[in-house]
Length: 156
Length: 109
Image 1 (tube, rainbow over the protein chains, first blue to last red):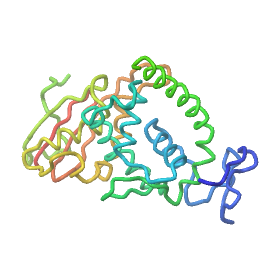
Image 2 (spheres, rainbow over the protein chains, first blue to last red):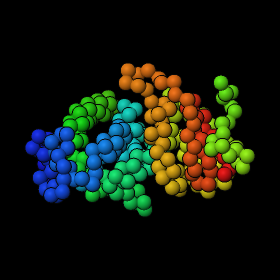
Image 3 (cartoon, each protein chain N blue to C red):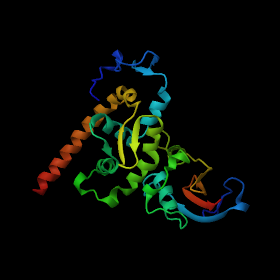
Image 4 (cartoon, chains in turn orange, red):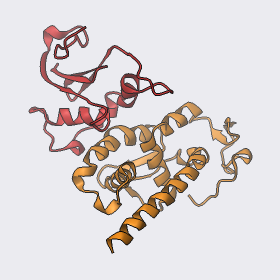
């Protein structure tokens, strides 16, 4: 997403359509995706991770890659040690539970042939809300990368 | 208390159904409930799937996330709630029942 989200009190969606409401956060939200649905979408770590990936990636996100990264994160292991066996259960959960839920809410689109994820028509609407939690993702991610680096250094 | 291996009446229609398989979900050992259900279904002899990719999304049959939260979630202070109950749904021509203690029962419908 090219557009920078301003702080929430100013409303991050400068280009929101006219038919909109002001959400609790002050962000302007189109009426067709209400706050209940947004929070339900974000109400699971794995779903937040998928949405976060979609917001930072400029390419379609490969579902298996996302499963590997999530596995490395959840298990606190380096990404390059994750095997296909390791990530199978997690990938199944993404495919059968979390991707469909986000897809139903228009927050992502899923290409069944390529097994990739891309933003959907409603992805922007969750962006201002996830911005808050993405800050904690950033902090956690930098700790995570530091862990990778330390393991790599040890391995040298 | 029901013995753990006795199947409940899923939708009151057990006369027409035969129990095919049962499996115990362990929230501490297994991944998500959805993963476990898919795993069980994939292993059924009459389900033509090599792996989970070959199946339609379980989400279309049931909001398994919500079931997991209801049966296996904890309240805010971390205390397990003593919930009793079963949830039944249809997936791939089977009736599947999940009980609050983690037992999953699969029937031919």
